[in-house]
Length: 70
Image (cartoon, rainbow, N blue to C red; front, side):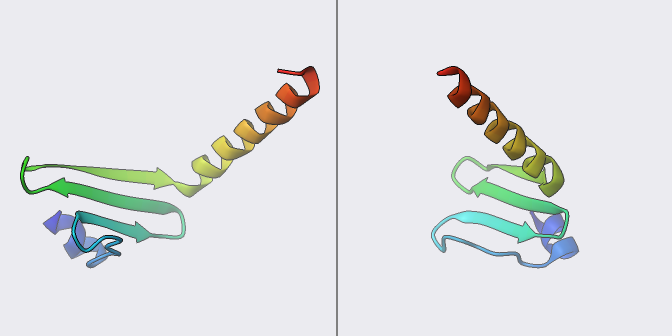
């Protein structure tokens, strides 16, 4: 968590009661979730390009399903 803050700044904290942070870059979204109670956390890097491709594939599958009646 501290390394991420050093590299990218404090980030966006959507809920003041939870230790979760978000960073929105041009190509990547970064999220950190941390539990002080469990002393565990996760770091997720999401490619915007790959997310857009996955959404387009899901939309195409839905269109194909609608044509064939599921």
